[in-house]
Length: 237
Image 1: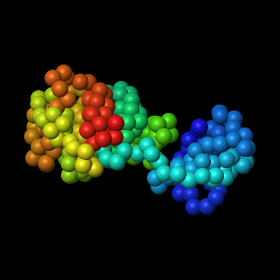
Image 2 (image 1 turned 90 degrees about the horizontal axis):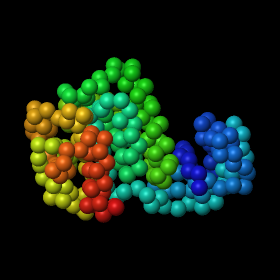
Image 3 (image 1 turned 60 degrees about the horizontal axis):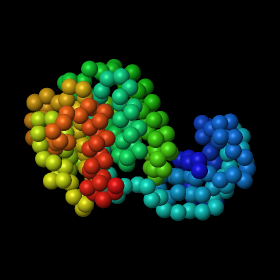
Image 4 (image 1 turned 90 degrees about the vertical axis):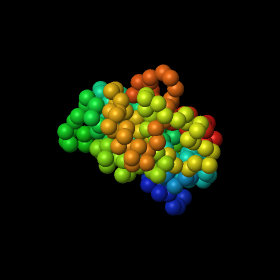
């Protein structure tokens, strides 16, 4: 069933406009009487019946029920900015898996170093990708894609429990993550990984080093592997 995010729903009706209304009317060609699912980010989903279509779409709320797809644990991904369109793929898959926030980070080995104007456009696109991934995967919220941070800024903004995946070694995830955990931050490097100085800095900031095994994973593989294993250890997968 088609799924759309809306502003907070308080009554028996909701109104969709803009791209969502155009998608319903022109792409999906839905008509009055057909059903869609709405989500307002409050932890609930709504079964809706289309009343009218056009430049805006009016929906009658038929049923309200708790969203079952949000993981109990909140994971924030601090991803060093990779080359090309790899970040788009990372964001899409991280959102599908259950990450609540993605933070692009500029590190010493990042080849991609966009200026402020270019990065603002990238973040706008990244947020659209996160929104579409949230719709597709049945998320109860739209995860946030943040503006680009330096590693120092990211270290100050990360949750108390945070780890960095390091090819130089660290503890296994099963030694760090438990079912009782409710929030984690994870740091993943770009194509060149993190420098030894950056790892030392993160460690001095309270970020623990972790390993994903003996094999060196690509920068777009590591966050997906890490999020999957962590959510499994916390009982969500």
